[in-house]
Length: 255
Image 1 (cartoon, one colour):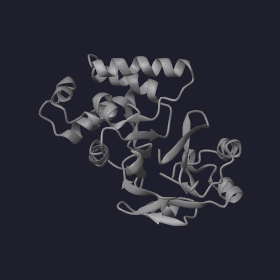
Image 2: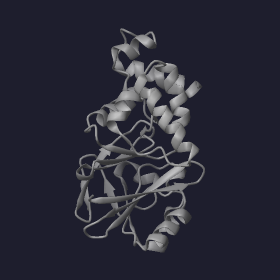
Image 3: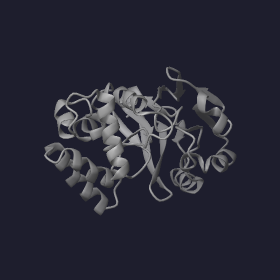
Image 4: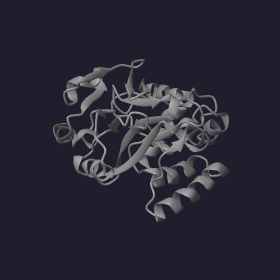
């Protein structure tokens, strides 16, 4: 595998991710909810840290950044349009930009909706995308700054990725997301199978992320708003896709 990925639980239900490019030993972290668990993992693994990759400005994704930067000297990467409310960036990025972690190329995706300027980090060669609060396991982030059409556009970008792409999202919300998903598609057999796996993992304190794009397309209601059977289930058979997505998001907000 070109990348070694370590999941770091932070705060109450956040995840950060250490990524090591195996040829060169270069190491990055995606998001810094708090510095302590990340520094502890780096110490245990005896890894240096070269890059800090920030998805968006919410405090539970950047709260430990300055401590981590000061301690490690790592360079900070984040969205150009979010730079006014992120810690100081060493590399400002826009959709379509690329950079390297060792020998691996990372592509930048604009996945706005939850926030404006939210980005995801896509390592195509490793079939891995770090999506934070845009696409989540069986869910998506609340639409705080964008609108439903924008967030649906973000879902379409994820749907276009290969099915075997693994989605590393920012929170352990999967069980509550699963309970909501059942209210939309109570007879979805793939969803029921997935929920059994989620229950087993959580009972053993195992993270439910990553999950594949193919699995999300089969079970995540926010990825399925364009399907006629889902539209019928929410009594919006003739509505456009973004409107159906919006209805599902509103229902989740009230759930």
